Amino acid sequence: MRIELVYIGILLFILGFSFNSVFDTIESRFATGGSNDLDNPSDRITSDAIHLYEDKLVVEKSNLRYASVEDTKSMEPLLSSNSHVIEAEADVDSLEIGDIISFSKENKIIVHSIVSIGSDSNGWYALTKGYNNDFIDDWRVRSFELKGVVVGVLN
Image (tube, rainbow, N blue to C red; front, side):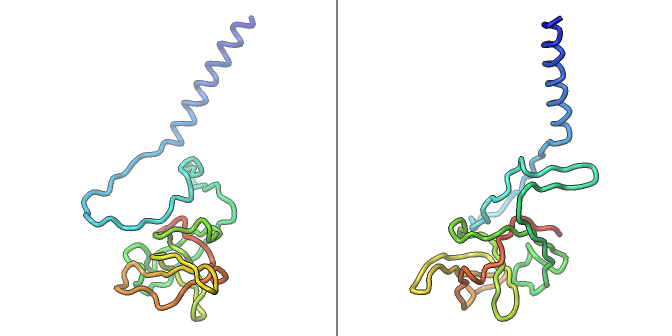
């Protein structure tokens, strides 16, 4: 009787694993072409924290915020008036070149990509640029101006 329970337990484990993998399969997509090696945002949400169900998408990450995007064309083609961003808390020690951050400047919350990180007598700063801009912004983003780091984009 005891060996039969072991076999049943193993069978249930295998069935449970197989059933779970049917609904939690990650498919790959390939973007082909292109010759420019750009600085891309850091991977802040691992695939095991994303769960797709028939009626919802669940992201297991604490302290996320959601915001719509005003279309200024500076971050096109990634962000437009149809875009929504999901942001996590921005820790200056984890930010890297290529990360997309939101920050307060000129009485607005701006979303741009980090092109340089440094420090001076006033402390940490980031230089930013819109993807669609030909110039680096003429300000230094300070840690107290950070609102978040973009971890997802919905269009």
